[in-house]
Amino acid sequence: MSDADEKIEIESITSPHHVQRVDKAKFMAMRDALLPVLPSEAAGMTVAEAKAAPLPNLSQELFPGSEKAGWWLKAVQLDLEAKGVIERSGKGPVLLFKTGKST
Image (cartoon, helix red, strand yellow):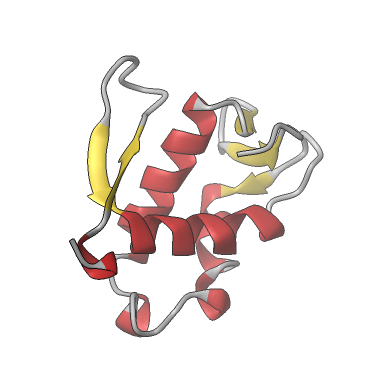
């Protein structure tokens, strides 16, 4: 299997005990672009801010014109929430922040 075809299993905080296999390169690229921009304080960052902040750091090869970046952001968000690496605060709008737990 080539690197381009490699898959990774991800979780979702909204569907406990369910895993999904997704493209590893795209998932890791989004995760690596998102985590550095998320604050460590519970005041957090809105999902809209979290979607915009990593865009300049995404590979144009994997995300040409930021295509599908929103879907990958949500996949990474839900997986990292399920793993306890990030949390959401507030009732609305949702604010995301890092917990300090490593991936």
